[in-house]
Image 1 (cartoon, rainbow, N blue to C red):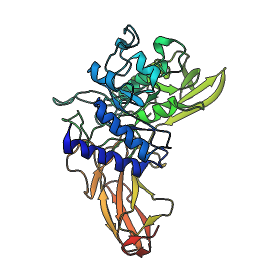
Image 2 (cartoon, rainbow, N blue to C red):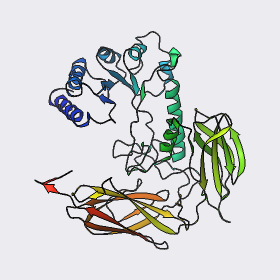
Image 3 (cartoon, helix red, strand yellow):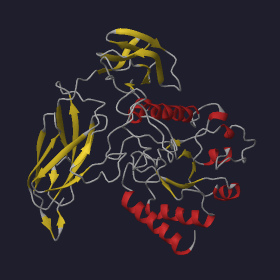
Image 4 (cartoon, one colour):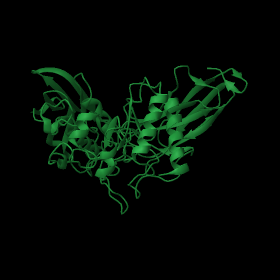
Length: 436
């Protein structure tokens, strides 16, 4: 990359540093998705020193298979980005300068090594597992790279994180003392370079989906990175029943950071597990579904320290709407947005986790409907209708410059409809700008 193309990258990096340098969420600056030249690295380093001299952040670039190019910037870069997971070929390197895709012991000892693409695989939120309607697993299309459900996606991520954790820099064994950091390639699904082209409208590598609703992988990472005892049962406990339904017998996975986990079905123990797979995944095979409750209890030193309980939902009965606004409420400044969670719940108000059907919306008042999306449907944005996914979805309404009451209603034949009201609060406009 040379000339104006490189100059544009410098300008973008400069503007990004200025804009985000006071954000506590920015940990490092990445100068390139792959290795860059010595001259380019010097220019990027100069930007960091000029525009973020006191932020405590490093600047570097990702590595690739070009040993000479990577070695050349080793004395300059303030961190080294790696994209190899826990590839065993790093363990076979001989000598400190020997390199595999940007990794070497020499680099490890000079500056932080950061795994910059923790888990590249993709899976949509709506596919619970192989036993859950309406999809009963994910059927791979001809242009899909991966065939994962929300459950297997979370389990794969646990395996990758455990590999990182065993090889973190604080490990006293030199052969397994490597990584200083572990970064998600995507925290949320987005319209990026996805590889599920037969099935998805987004890249679905995120811990949350494109409207920020959490996937099972989100809860898995919550448990793994929690300093306090924590437990999460992967999935739900509302499988099909009735004379025509197939009996559901499956492995139930509990993600926990405790020493042991006990699983109970309707109060009866289904076993105690003290040997998790990949550090956190406690497996309970051949659990037969029975309507009622599924409870996981995590114990340390024999004492209960964390638990989670799932209960079986009844048939869909009504729609539930929950508004989400900023701390000051919805501001009538023409750009603020209110989010609205739309759920299908049973008669007791519990979400129906396998509900997947159309909901129709209506809007009145000083708001602009922005809608939501369905991850597997083209042109699902901005419509006044949307399917639930796993019993929930999320839509949005943008304010205008007029304050007042915004009314949103949601309906589906056979269900009790719902309506909410959101107040768009007046905002003082000075010289065309909203006063904050």
